[in-house]
Amino acid sequence: MADRGIQSYRDLVVWQKAIALSVACYQLTANFPKEEIYGLTAQIRRSSVSIAANIAEGHGREHTRSFVQFLRTSQGSLKELETHLIISEKVRLISQAQLDEQLSAADELGRMLRALIRSLQNKLEEVE
Image (cartoon, rainbow, N blue to C red; front, side, top):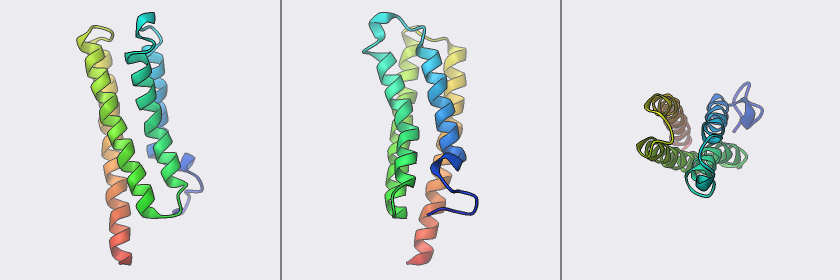
């Protein structure tokens, strides 16, 4: 599974970007009202953490097909996060500028996930 220079999931740029997005989401939600602690705050934090966690878990699997499935789960968590952020802007917990910044980072991460999935699927097809 490991490519040249990739010794760990921590070496994957896509995982590093997912961590950065999660940290940004924690910082963004730090000022949410206390009544949101079990609402949008928890949902945003949980979905953002899930993206990086699934990349890491999938990389640790012994089979490329499993890794692809975990990457798809990360994509789902990313879309969930985007939805929570959009709702947060609509209920005025974050500004349009904050939303745009996070959605831009999410778009980049989504492109990276799709590219990695395509690359892994192409490798699987070559083997078959």
